[in-house]
Length: 138
DNA sequence: GCCAACGTTGGC
DNA sequence: GCCAACGTTGGC
Image (tube, rainbow, N blue to C red):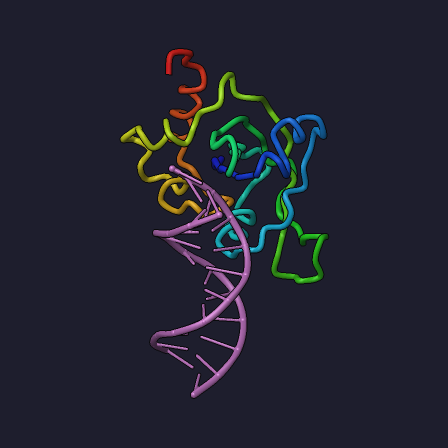
């Protein structure tokens, strides 16, 4: 069981769009590192849904429902997609700022490698961010 | 809107 | 195989 974080620009595809649709084919990834992460996803893995550019926060939890297969939006065989389903919206969004402020989260790719759009995240980091969202005071 | 970081491309 | 030029992403 692995944990991941994917980014989406909310004015292109937001958590609400995702929830409304009930499922998403995660296409358009054109970066090898991100692609390799997509390929490593297994059905049932947990995935944080992060709003980039606007919002700048983790907003919800998704789950991998279908593992990598060729990206139907291109003939190029190098690229793949996975299918995600929404699990639940976070009680409150956890902002990038908060993540940056916590010593225990300094190693996550969201900070270290800000341009990567699909990244692995450690279980402890996942749990910590999740605990932030359940804490009204932060 | 700007710019830093980083990936990709192409000339040599 | 190196590196300059260029494009893209994403935070600020």
